[in-house]
Image 1 (cartoon, rainbow, N blue to C red):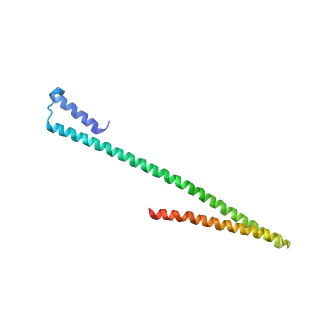
Image 2 (cartoon, rainbow, N blue to C red):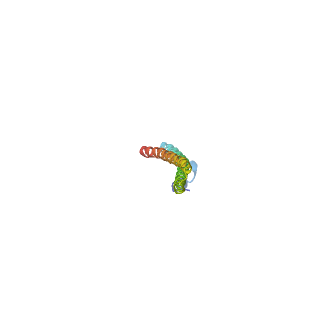
Image 3 (cartoon, rainbow, N blue to C red):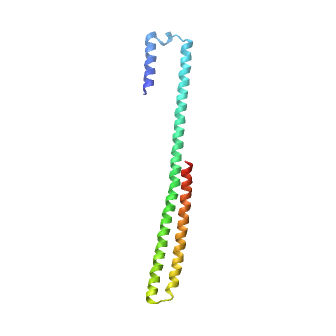
Length: 145
């Protein structure tokens, strides 16, 4: 039990002991007024507890929503990083083919290397655009807070 509960029980017990029997306690207007005040205070206490619980639940829901919002963002960042890595590999392979074609005086390999370079460049540009699109909403969210 809490301290105020124990104190209230002790007060009731002391009053009963003073009057020897419960029926002997005089019921005055002051006693009735204090009873009503105690009931109002208790009702207010319960209301405050309920508001606190509601606020706590709302904060918990907001926290979960933020967690759910960041998961897709992390996935997008991972996808963009993979896309950039793939584009870099295509560009690297295209450069290797160009070097081999130049060393072997081969005229057909540069066409394939050019296609790989275009592909890699396009992928890099797309990844860069996606990354900018992710960063813009984050910056606007920070500005709103």
